[in-house]
Length: 80
Image 1 (tube, rainbow, N blue to C red):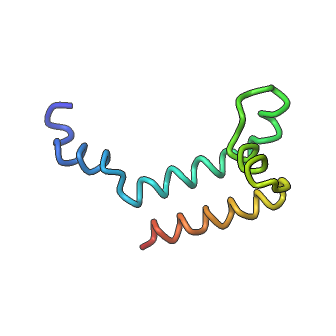
Image 2: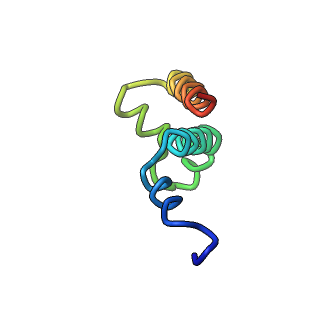
């Protein structure tokens, strides 16, 4: 990237700092909750919602509740 981004910046981002990890969690879980039913109809690969439901024997509503908790925790980490 030349002089635009320094090596230290790449080292920091690839070290998975809490703010980057938390942002990814928020994006992934929110996207999967919103698109879950649509993706099921289209026969796409399993979403985090389906995986969680199958792994924990949970209903969709319980899964959304857990994901919303994880999203809230991720926001707390970002604000930290």
